[in-house]
Length: 546
Image 1: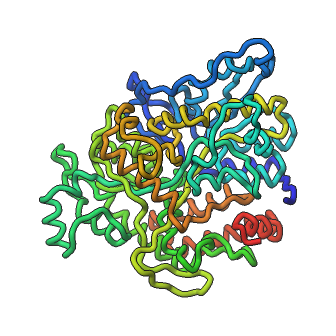
Image 2: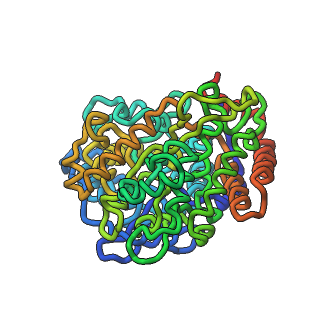
């Protein structure tokens, strides 16, 4: 692959515009909200604040070393990770494992936390200068276009396939196919499995099972109230529940909750929502660009209908959500104040923690679909038999990469592999606060996977919630059609442009058509600046169309 070197200033500009990545939150057991940092300022607004982290911890896996077995003696492994603290998402597990790792290898682990907006530029500065300050980053999967394209990180196949017994073992085959694909790039392994992001629909199972609501809904809409299978059914349910008292506090609540603050990950949610309007049996891969020209596809009739449909749903949520970040929307659901939402796996796990008003009431299912989609290749709408549903791996899927300039790559791989072991991953997936979402067969209940309901019950889950949650993710990541994940240089900029114009449409500053046209204009400008031929070459390779 062609080597790509971007000026540091350009990288800083791109990353400073970037949106807060998928990172859940909770509060520590004392009840004080964990304070994340975004944009250089400390703020709790991106994290859920109504639940507590609890005391569940993973088991010790690596035993202390002695003598020559301490192969990392006098070595230091430095990890750069988003600011979150010892009880925060993604960073928290490093604090838990530090003593175990140091005792097992003789190394010293240094944890460098930086605000999200500074993570990518600091890492890229270190890599482009060859400084080697950071041995590893817990990186977003969409960074691989830049990291691999610049030849900045090590392929990990030799470490993974090592048979000497030197490293802890994790099984890439345990990772379901959707998230597994994000660990590799151009046929090589570059990430050690950690977090597995994807979005599903959450709904108040108690409300959908209530006979009074079922009767009233059928009278109003002419069909049975059920877990929404289509976007129209999702809209009907949101409209029906909007304005009703959903948590028994005597005040009206909302049909749904979203977060629509610009810079707050809204573009991720648009991707998952829009997928079945564009992706379909005859067009399983093309959502972002025409691979022959790199002309953006974002203003197609399918994209436009998706944005119009999403914006229509805003009326069934609280007015305040126009300025909400992710955690504020999660809080609204966790307080029992909304009937529906769609988001990452964090919410289903957070719903089980102390402080949640919806434990035992949180159903989950794959994202609703459509009955037709716009085939951007054929240039026409196409009907489908049944419902057109598209799985997704939307989000950061935060996982470890190793710098090409690390002076302790074997020690670094030991650390990442230790955290990827099934014993630890299982516990991470049970918890809501640590940011590690499910995506492995060992996370799913039988017959989909190898876990058991006893494990979830011991971790404090409601049995029905656990069954719905694990089924939803198994079906999402295992869907025949998967939303095409963008991993090319400049992805930060492309997605930032989409987020800005989505917000303009949501707030009425632009029509959906104008917002998408502006997105196309920005995409073209970014592509031209980075090099259309180079971008086209990498994009085609990323889609497997060579």
